[in-house]
Every structure is written in structure tokens, then in C-alpha cells.
Image 1 (tube, one colour):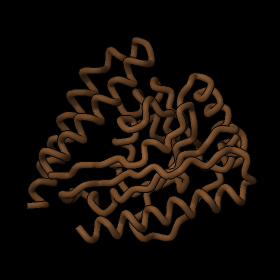
Image 2 (image 1 turned 120 degrees about the horizontal axis):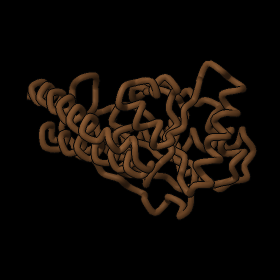
Image 3 (image 1 turned 90 degrees about the vertical axis):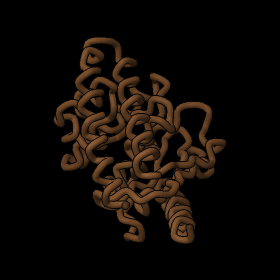
Image 4 (image 1 turned 180 degrees about the horizontal axis):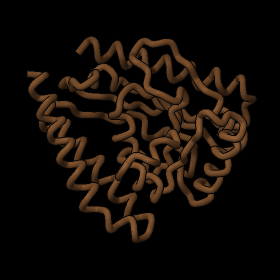
Length: 237
């Protein structure tokens, strides 16, 4: 049954992506908010399909920990679900993504118009300068920065590998960092989508002012501890 539902979802995903991405193309000629709305609609449609076809729901915990103003939202990345859900969970986030994604038809066009933050991971020092420049611009517009500190998806239980980009943002932007943990990798495995409830949990925010090593230790410790707990919780269901 899981395999059949997963195949049906893939068909639905392809169809809804084509219909919405093509139908929303005129928005690229309008203000940025039109493209942002298109991204939100697509995310909502995908999440609806997961719930109805695959029996896969989601729950958000700890919203009270999200600072009232613009901040850095940093968390675990285990599945594509994470990038689909963030635009629905966080209002108009400036998501940090690898620059190559801007050249993907449709996805890249909308991401560019929505002013997501493109990062050239191979450029090292210049990439960090570009990251900070873009992040300051987005914060000035009242938006929060959403970043996956490890830079790529990690399977549940894999050793953590936090990159310096999130520390550069934290030390230079002087805003709180709201960490989050999740267990999406327990339900979204390759092409299979298992029924259940994905939990994304925001943890107490880290106030600005810590030194880089202390911040990285605090961020990794909170996220990894909570992620392991949510994984154990999913395994018991």
C-alpha cells in the first residue's frame, strides 16, 4: 500500500507542479509578492497531497519560541519535505539555497523573483561575503533568514556536519537564531512516503552575542538532541 500511495503521490506531485508553475508564470512579471504567493500555494498543494494520498501529516511545535521580529531560522534537513514546508510554516522566509537551483526551470525562476538567498558553495570566502550581503538586504526588508546549517540533507542518525555559514550570519547580523529539529526523514525515504505525522519543533531562541564556537556548540547541541528525541518518538508510533 505504501508503494502504491507513493507512486500516486509522485503522479499528483508532477501534475500539480506543472499546472501551478505554468499557470502562475504571469506572476513573474508582477511584484515579488505574487511569486511568494505562488510558492506558498504550491507548498500547500504538495502538503495536501501528502495528507490525502499518503496519510502523511505534519505538526509544528514550539511556535512560541520564534522571535517576533526578523531572525535566523536554522534547523535539520532530512528530506525534500523540509523545503516544501518552510514557506508555509515561516512567513515569507529568505531561504538559503545553492546557487545552481536558480537555473532550474520554474523553481529557479520563482526563487529568484522571491529573492531567496543563493549561495555559491564552491567560492568559500567570497560566498560568505555574498551570503552576508544578501542576508542583510533581506533582514532590512523585514524577512527572516531560513538556513539548513549542514548545507545538504542528512539521513536520520547520520553524523552531523555543520558548516560555517550559519555562524557568519549569527555573528554579523546581531539577531536571534531560532533552531528547529524535525523527523521528516523517518517518513520521507527516497521515493516512498510513509503514513504518520512529521513533527517540526522550534527550540528556544539563541540570543545574539555569543562567540562563534559557543554559538555553534549550542546550536548543534540543541538541534541534534531534539532531532534524536523526535526520531525516537516516530519509531515508537
